[in-house]
Image 1 (cartoon, rainbow, N blue to C red):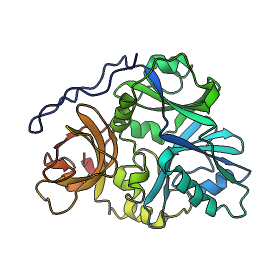
Image 2: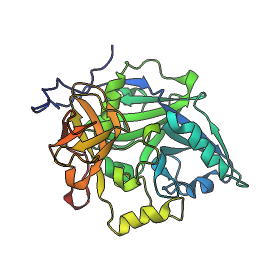
Image 3: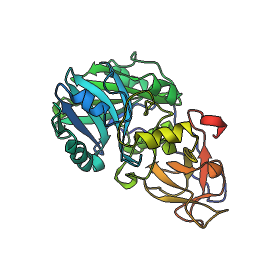
Length: 338
């Protein structure tokens, strides 16, 4: 039996929506076909990726996963990853499947003489999303890091990784007390004894975590700070250069970030890349949907102008579109902008 969706019934567009979160007994697993895996192997795989991504990959220890971004020269995100070690000379980059091929092609262009080989391992390695303490306990993963609703704190400390059921399991930040994990391993070793988790429930957990994931529809739309990537541990400002580093650093140290990500509920399904508008300033878009989850109400992680972040006048798709109701973030924004 599928676990329930993470949404309650929606009110009409003019009234408040029921955003009651699901019971704490949510439990199960779902295969994430919309995720893919890039494998990097070779003696210089870590140093190569260290020079390409926003994260310190050179010093990534076994047993830990980190968030990372891949930027254009203009500092715009081409992809985002969860990065973990497979073996001594192997790294796995988990990302959205719909942008894997162009990302792999672009990264491969810069390998040159580095002792690093990049391949698409998605056919070989499956990605499974787990939610609920019983599901993680079934894989022996419940003790790997405590439940923590502060996603920024947990991600900054590094996400624990442990061997589980023939693969590896990444402990993701918990969402309102609901434990989460990503299992990656051989497709033939997929854990079979876990209850099925509704895909919509997983999507809603991802949105409510406010940890952004770049998809094909949002490629080159955002500088990392615009979607809070540095707040959840996806940018290391002490490491060396990488494509777009000057733009990202300037946004950080000059205080030029004028947009941030927020979580919203709405009465209509949102789509990544969809524009949002401020009904009080309808002449141009006020932001863009980063990630979304269907349901009643639907949920969306939205990049939006700081001035409009808490506005009740935000609308989906047009200035006359469905209302967007702001929900609490699981971590603070700089300067109390949340």
